[in-house]
Length: 221
Image (tube, rainbow, N blue to C red; front, side):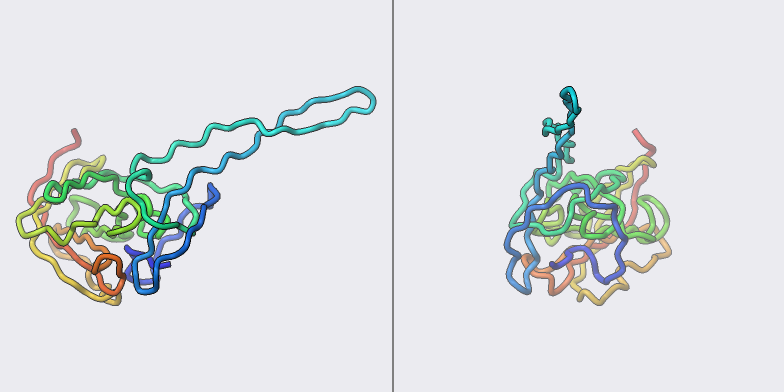
């Protein structure tokens, strides 16, 4: 299984499995694997009845309401997923008006995190801080938030909403690199943003990288 957002094997471990995942055939070799968000498994809840002399205990399966999944999990997904769905920590939202994107963002770049949406590269600057704020995301699978990032041009806005405020970055350009070019996540001396995804679409051969500079900050609304 190809991991869209991860440039190297340096990933954060996510939490334990909370559901049983359906699997479906993988995409062809050399393409970004497609995924499907499964429904949560319903676990039986035991109830107890007794009889007289001698007492016996039986159990029956009582229906349990499934835990609600984030709304983003129900957007367009392709193919079948084979990794477990585990909880992910949402840290805000990313808004890119040029490509009509308004999507939750999460902490971490493990596959089980970017399954839900763009993930913040651990150790990179938090939104609004001095340094390189890095987000990885899927392009053609899961909720495919970065499907159209190749349409972004200098001057376009990338807006991050977090508990610390609203931070607006202006796109300065893009690059196409190999998966080995981990320098794209290196710190920067000024407040910048880097978002990246697999390239070209339906392939993990390269990475499409969009850069931007922080131009405005506002307190939480």
